[in-house]
Image (cartoon, rainbow, N blue to C red; front, side, top):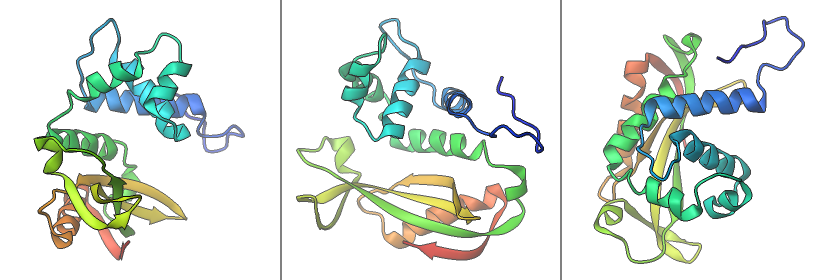
Length: 195
């Protein structure tokens, strides 16, 4: 169990180990995945968190770590997560499970961003449903798009929800879906920023 310093402690509140432990616990609690080959979900999530925190590829990170699944092994297990609606729901439950109590029942500055990840190649039927068309960038006009809603407080962001944008979804629908996520969290909107 992670212990946190008292408010008067001279040690930092977060360490790399404590942050990793909390993130791993949250992912394992909310994102069940069956592993094969003698590996555990914790190893999959550790590798993914390391790659994401360093802006590195799965393949490169897997080669650098001993006793971890290969890049192909990681992708094999990630391919099992093919129900986008269930995955989105699980990820949002994970994000929202760690919201501090003082955030609730208050109004905040809320921001919504749209993120585009370039797509190249021939999409599968599952992928095609989530390919978003936009202005040419990075040599393509097709992207995977996801939108995030987060609050801004003291120059820090707290992500409250994420949404995979369907190809037939309008931007108004996307904003509506994200704002609807705030209601059960009892988070009010003082000001809304759209980017």
